[in-house]
Image 1 (tube, rainbow, N blue to C red):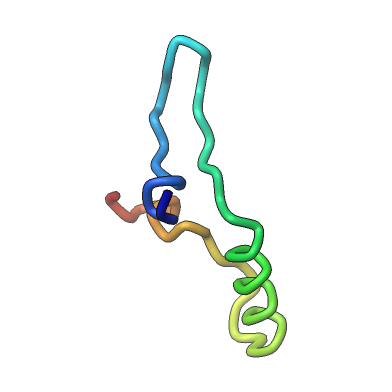
Image 2 (tube, rainbow, N blue to C red):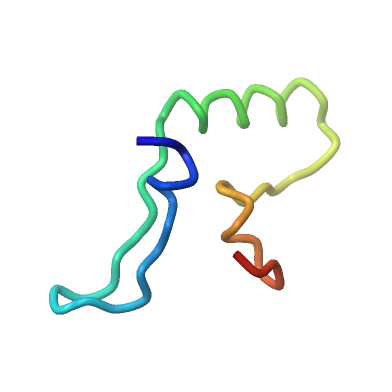
Length: 55
């Protein structure tokens, strides 16, 4: 399953809200990049979760 497919959110279901599933290796890469570059304090992952960005 690709990153975009795994991160897709369905607003509501019979079981309640669904949350994105993200590969821990992807998150580690983003944290390492943020730590090394020190150019931002926050990053949404996946990008489709960024407020104001249409999916």
